[in-house]
Image (cartoon, rainbow, N blue to C red):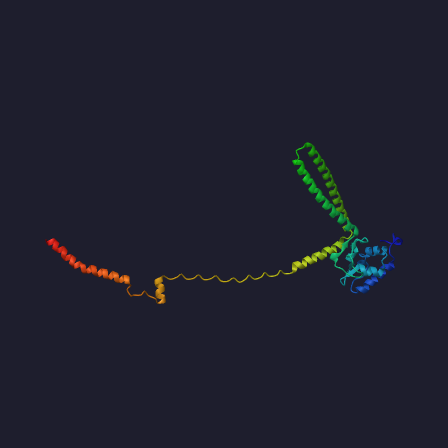
Length: 272
């Protein structure tokens, strides 16, 4: 804010001389001339109106790469209203804190609470109007339907009012947040963006190798036939005749012995 005693006036020439002297000490290899300093003069004039001294102007408004001097980017920032940004609660004096924990102004926090409350009210009213609409469709009595429709109309009007209040609060919040545009919220957003970037640069963990699968069991060979099995094992059928074989052989011998006598008998009958 400009000093009342300096409004409508310009800085004395010595003010510029002091600034250029400071700059020549800070940046000995930079060109300090009327041509190069003329770009900075409007900034210096405004700071002089705000009551800044020459040494403060030189230290806080100029930066250099060793050869050229330019105005600091901080010069373009608007002055923050008092209380536009606040430190986290219960932060001790002289204690630095994480920018992500920075709070907005008390008025902004109040507006945010009101907006949340209205959103909850809008949700309840929307549910009520939906139920009333369904009830009106199901009601057969004309008198009862008229009463339900009247209640429905009242709830709709109330819902429209809450929505209008929510829109006003949204505009108010946007206006309040403009006060901290490049300082408060930008710091918070940059902090969050850095965290997201850090997570993105971390290489993903390699997938775990699959567990080794057991080889399938080989199928069992088919069982060999009994004869082959007997040959392979060295076991053969016992050649000793059984009792049944002996009986068959005796019967065959008896038949063979009776055949000659039977043949002679047949021949005698044929001759007679």
